Image (cartoon, rainbow, N blue to C red; front, side, top):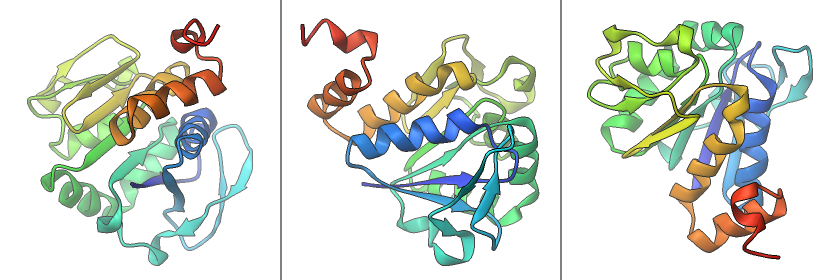
Length: 188
């Protein structure tokens, strides 16, 4: 299992970092990928961090899962990067795991990926034009599509990705390690 999470200036800190953290706890190989030629990326709250890779160093088709964190500015910057759309459409057509949170599911909607699917996103970014069925849950999985509403849904979003990519026992181990309430009582 190999996952890429795409970072653009202005991405929402927790939506990316919680997901990276939980996937790495589950021993899923994760590359944080800057969509520019610069490894340095700034979050929506001014935190600067270095991505593992830059776009020109990767082959998006080599990943099992592709992930888009949100953040209004981050999503606008992702939208402006045309090669990302092509990568996601190709990935989706191969029925591989496709994930987005907060404002970023709007990109999937614009690209036709949400058509006929149950999805969620930050409420202001939903649209009947996407052709999907908007849900109010924190995070929603419909086949190979995982979407989530926003920063407060980051753990549930990452949890669904871990659940999809690994075994139930790995998910329980990760949940216990972060003291996620669903698993806490299983270990007392």
